[in-house]
Length: 324
Image (cartoon, rainbow, N blue to C red; front, side, top):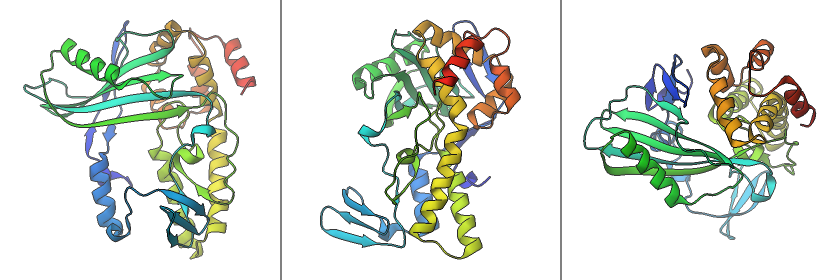
């Protein structure tokens, strides 16, 4: 596994909780902490002297950037991974606030709860709590919501986390760190972004799983493609790399069409249907759930998702697909 040195925590399985059932899913689950990732990459790449923190990129070209309106840095190629532009996206958002807490007594969890949807649901969003047991006396508790709003009140999310801890009788002692995010979730398969010959990656290029918002596996695939090309041809420049990355993005977006259809079915339904859809999905076989998260659904996996008695009919699915 290429990312094995980066993994901070790992578990052999995880669980989900819904009003109708709890379920353990026998699939490995891993967590990478940003602090560990940062220190590992600095050691591995030897780039400590080339890091510029708290700087603003004023101008970017395929081979140069200008920082804080004065310093110019030149390179064989520039890769833009600054994230999504506010004007670039029209859809909904996955909003989350995560807090790592030390507890005054053991929490009793041995595997993550990646989705507890027994919490209160509102009309305009899908809400769940995500919990990682880091040590016997520490937890990462994350409030996650799929909503039309790109930002939510932080105090509301903090209160939700504390209420959830009280409900589970976890005695919160002190907070270690906090993270907040807003991930775009597409309702339509986005058109290819016009880079203007500047190479874009990550959210800047919509390189993420269209439903879950996960981006690390896709970033690794792209990095491997670039590395293999560089080793094979012994050359890398902005023109060649731009073509390689653009081809990767086009192929990625084709793979996301099915997930965008699922997003339309899920998020354009009412809030009660949100919960029903997720409960149904987590009754599917472990293999299909693994393939879904890994972005590796087969044709038969896709058929299986709509077989049985899903909350959404095949006619609704066909309508959503034709309107992508």
